[in-house]
Amino acid sequence: MAPGEAALGRAEAIAGEVNREQRLVELCRVGDPQAFGRLVALHEAMVYNLASRLLGDREEARDLAQEVFLQVYRTLGRFEGRSSLRTWIYRITVNLCRNRQRSWMRRHRGRACRLDELTPAEQAQLGTGRPEIETPFEQLRRTERARVVQDALLTLSFDHRAILSLREIEGLSCEEIAATLSLPEGTVKSRLARARDRLRMALEGRLPAEARP
Image (cartoon, rainbow, N blue to C red; front, side, top):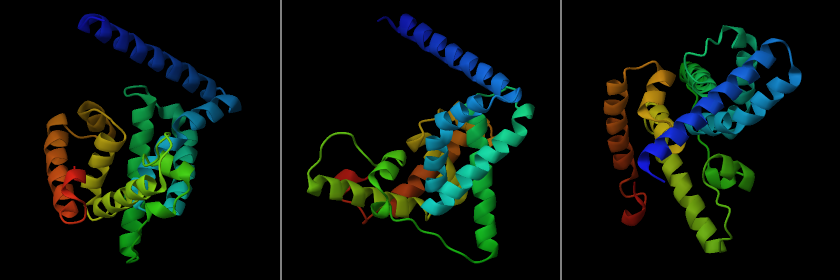
């Protein structure tokens, strides 16, 4: 497929996704409970994934995911469609995680999540599970690496943790991250570079050289 055809196909796919989102939002606004259930089903894994990375606590992430969709339900009427629905939900998730961490800091609480304590399904949601068959040694090595990376991620500031999670784990573009965090795209790129440096420094000595980002 030629580059022009690939770009056109991607543009058509994005337009189709936006149209489906708009239709789903319209159904939710008129009180269709099945439509809101579909909205939750489409986005609940990504919300849990992001909240787990930002908070470092699986129980808190589950609780916060419920809070996210409660806020989505309450404020969907104010969604103007200037960004994608996914970006809007990411923004709500990041803001609620930021508020919760501030609450923890006021109460002098710390949180830490060991990924090796998660179920296989939860590891898959966090991006640490793989569908292929692995030997016990391979599985242990992958899980341990995921735990070390998560531990290092939690040593970063919330802003650096958020921008790394959105870019490296959730796969958002810098433009999408700018819309999610309400930042200029240039600020996103410079902050992302600093966050990568900080994570690399945090991982020095924790991982074998070949496994470092």
